[in-house]
Length: 590
Image 1 (spheres, rainbow, N blue to C red):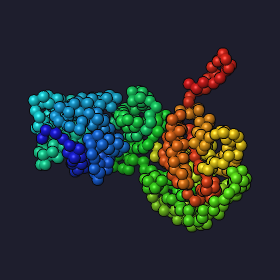
Image 2 (tube, rainbow, N blue to C red; image 1 turned 90 degrees about the vertical axis):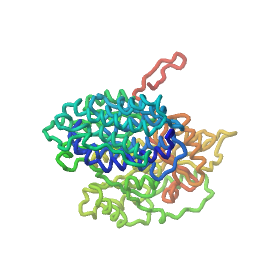
Image 3 (cartoon, rainbow, N blue to C red; image 1 turned 60 degrees about the horizontal axis):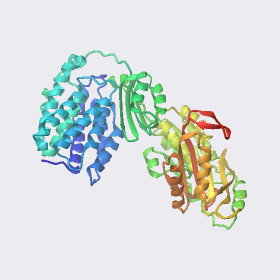
Image 4 (cartoon, rainbow, N blue to C red; image 1 turned 60 degrees about the vertical axis):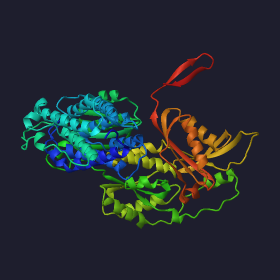
């Protein structure tokens, strides 16, 4: 075999998952470094399961396509020291692959993979998985100029990796004392063997006696840092070197690997809450896992589960994939909101009508909320219900009444979003983040109450009529959501809806490095995309999604209107006065 295809790479990855999953208990058994928590096999299985999920039932046209899918899957799923180090290896290995993978290309990829794996660790040591990776990389480099058959070089790489694994027992005192080889190194060797088997179509597994002894010697080990924290951060504001330096004060076994705009972080610490706080300042936490290794060692439940379940209405405009992923109980209120007929009212008449709104009856019942609470309580310790504004809907009153009917009402919390549509969406996205970061329910409520005032929601008609002025520039009236109700948002000079929204948001978002916005539309998705593109061209903006405005929202804001909500994510640190000779003092953000 002289070349590898994307299908060969797919087979290698899928078989690696199968073999690791099959031998995970053997890997767990010899796991004594850096801590004897006996979970390296489990962690590597979870890590490779991310790859399996990303590629198993999909077809790829190019090496680049499958490589990107593998990296995204492994970065999201990576767990434990060995899992994150292997992710580092793949982060160097996969981008080096060309559409024509031969021995020389594999040699270059292995070399880069070994380098990235070592760079991901704060304090790399001999006698670990790195030795096994290095042995395989060196073998490919040595034979790349004299051997063209990929399988033959793979066979030699497996032999070299196995010898390096056996030697780990002599390089680390703790492994020698326990009479075992490095567990992560064994995992990487199994991955190499699996890759070879996938290419050959038959197993040539080296006997396990060559890897480690049958009897593992048990002895007392002191864990210097009790908790393992693993997190995935998006859009980091710090470089990996800076992240390592900041985390160094909080623990050890630090692994940091970046792929594009995402960073996987692993650390052992006695201060998991401080680690979590530090991570929040480094970027957007997409997922976070805290494990008590002391409990894991003695066989007790060690991973803190997601303990808060969410309930909300369809007026929140969440996408189905978000509802499914985070197991949100969604109350359907759309069938009770018939669309109003289009009228020929002027924008001013609409404003007068909408600003005098009182809470509308949704046609929902207390029982619907009660059933939703009971269902979530079967799965979660606490339930948080985030309702549409109590000043516009009767949702909040119904949810509170349902809460009072629960046998243990202290487990259910009802929060008024004081917003509508896209604004309610932003509250829920913030709640999801806090839950994933494993905040307790009282902390979540406190954070959300502070967050509500930071949301800006604007409503404007899609079919703008001329109200005043000449030429293309016109005076337009807008609506805003404030303290749960809809008020006049003033007038603005602009050519169209795109410019209106751009001016409204940009004018107030200058103190933020980045903002998050959610956009809703009725029948003109082109306008919404133009607003998004216009914002992205002028400010760093995150748009989680764009969605149709449901009937329960359009009945409040009007059928011809669109709604856009935003909040600041990264605040500019300081606002310093600078002297300008022509204009006097003005403020410059630093």
